[in-house]
Amino acid sequence: GRVRFRDLVPPPPPPGYTSFTPWFLPPGISLDNSSFPSGHAAMGWMFLPLLIIVKDRKIKDPIRIIVSILVIGWGLFVGLSRIAVGAHYASDVLFSTGAATIITIFLYTRFYRKRNKSE
Image 1 (cartoon, rainbow, N blue to C red):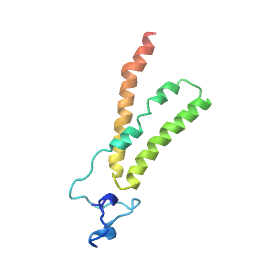
Image 2 (image 1 turned 90 degrees about the vertical axis):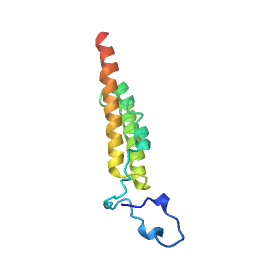
Image 3 (image 1 turned 90 degrees about the horizontal axis):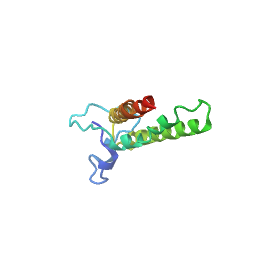
Image 4 (image 1 turned 60 degrees about the horizontal axis):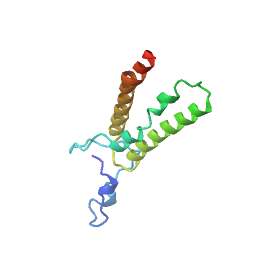
């Protein structure tokens, strides 16, 4: 698998920086099963429920546009930074993003939408 940058120690020479794989190259097969969901990426999407608050505003409303850009931009920034520093694989970040999205949708359908129907 791909060596994470933080695990590299300059001396002794092997493995050193020669075994470091840049983040933009696809990693090989990991024999040590070192993949796990990214908690940082999941927390990067913690503002996703804010999109529920602005969903009833008009599409061109500046508040809706700003909130949407900030929420989605922050989630993408955190997720991509975890991949860039080599702390997680893309699949780890995608799984965390999917989990945060599913939880947000579940909470919306369970609480927010049900509350608005009763009013």
